[in-house]
Image (cartoon, rainbow, N blue to C red; front, side, top):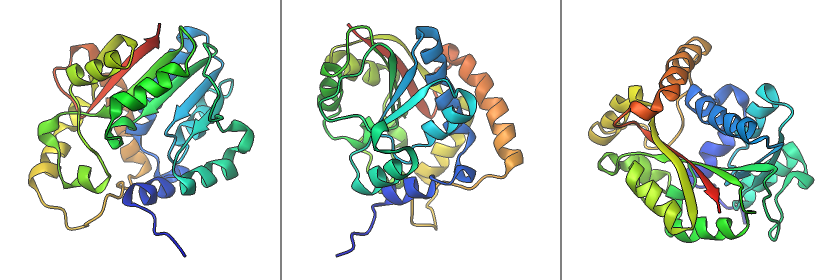
Length: 238
């Protein structure tokens, strides 16, 4: 019996094609790479890896970093193994050492018990291992788009920090990303979509390059923004 992919799985399978990647993905990936370089890490552990596009981007921009993945969806895991090989899969009982930076990029909003999931990964990390987490921001902006993608919630800096600290992490910083994209979440909230799905928009190369230039700049200044469409936190197992 063929099992139809969920909207999230369909979105992620579409993103296997690098031409579908967008500037807001690249900005998140750059933060992970920056943390890895600052910590002297040689590996990136992509938890809830989805399409594995973090690995594709790192292969282009930071080939010295070894990409590894963990993904619960059988369909997405199969695509990851085909792309990267079974040896790159993080084993069920494997710990993540300080030679790695762990990344959970837009993952925990899909998990009803986010603190429980974070706690489980906290126990699998060695003391001193860094974790980068991104989530969609602003609960008031929760819309049908979030429901279609299986989101349980959106976050503020305060609520993301609280979830990480409840799981045992020390949070070094927590900031909003993409203030320039706030009109998009307002539109999603108040303007009904005719598409009826959760597909990512396809951007031209020119739009991607312009968006990347803008969002890379606002990311560098992220300490100052009072709001944005995403929250990013950098935490540590202690």
